[in-house]
Amino acid sequence: MENSASLIREHFKKTGTATIATCLFKKGLKNQYIQHVVPLKKMIEPMVGQAYTLRYIPAREDLNTIDVFKDPKHLQRVAVETCPKDHVLVIDSRANARAASAGSILANRLMTRGVAGMVTDGGFRDAAEIADLDFPSFHQRPSAPTNLTLHQAIAVNEPIGCGDVAVFPGDYIVGDNDGVMVIPQHLAREVAEECLLMEAYEAFVLEKVTSGSPVIGLYPLTDSRLKAAFEQWLRQNPI
Image (tube, rainbow, N blue to C red):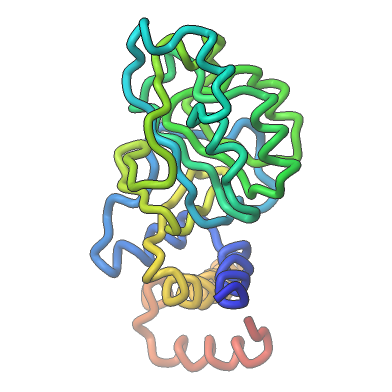
């Protein structure tokens, strides 16, 4: 199972979110793009990992004093300490960035534990410090107030909604400079393999277009001669 997960991750590392979005659209999945989140810094390579989730509900003042962080079972801290290596911590903050979902200390802890990245549909505090880490992170915008101001951590690693997308534990999360896509776990291998071929074809198309070829018959591929040319190109440029 781990070898399969590792192969899927490697495939997605070579794939952009735009390609994944098109592949999922062909399969009838149109709502897998997490809305209104951006990387804290420019991405060099995609963030890839399976989802491990944290869900917030609106905070209630008598239950969310600063002293709650002294509880070793506080679920925000539990999520940080239990998120597995190579996974992505995905936080349901109800698309509310008026208070932070987490900050730089927790981001550092996740990074040192080998977590692949974190995503919230809210905001992070210490955003500049998080951006300096070698740790992919996505949010709406910076937010200074502590999460206790608005958020109560209520559940770890159960289905959530993040940026209007259903995220189930184990789904694959891919993030790049265009945003974050969620790939259902049962489709991940199929999508990863198809996306590799799609990326190869787009490289072929770019070669043709930059050398003067028109897009009609080429993008999408409907010309049988161009199909044969791509097959030959693929033999010379194996994926």
